[in-house]
Image 1 (cartoon, helix red, strand yellow):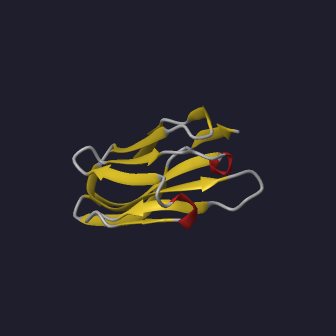
Image 2 (image 1 turned 60 degrees about the vertical axis):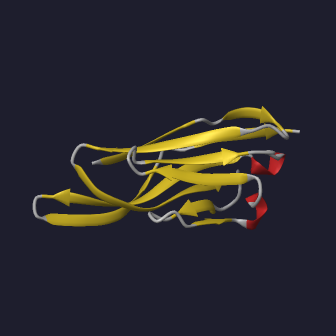
Length: 125
C-alpha cells in the first residue's frame, strides 16, 4: 500500500509564498517513481494539472503559474515539492499531489497513479 502525504498549505496574502511538500511511503517496495505532479481544484471547477516533473527532471507547468511556481523532486526521499511565489487569489484551491509509482510484489510489478489527501491553499487579496 502506497501513501502520499502532503504538507505546507495554508492561508497567505497575495504576493506571498508557500512551499508544498509530498512524500511517498509504502508498506511494501517502491520499485520506481515515474512522473510526479501537483494538481489543484477550486470550488466549482475541474481539477487541473498545475505542474509535473518526470523522473529525469523535465518539467511542465500550466500557463497561469509559469514564472511563479517551481516544481522539484528528491528521488532519494521519494518526495516532490512545489514552491509557489507571488501567489494570487486565483491560486486558491485544494492542491493534490500525484505520482505514477511502480511497486514490487514478489516477482511482479504494478504501476498506477496515487493521490495525496489534498492540502488547502487560500490566498487573500
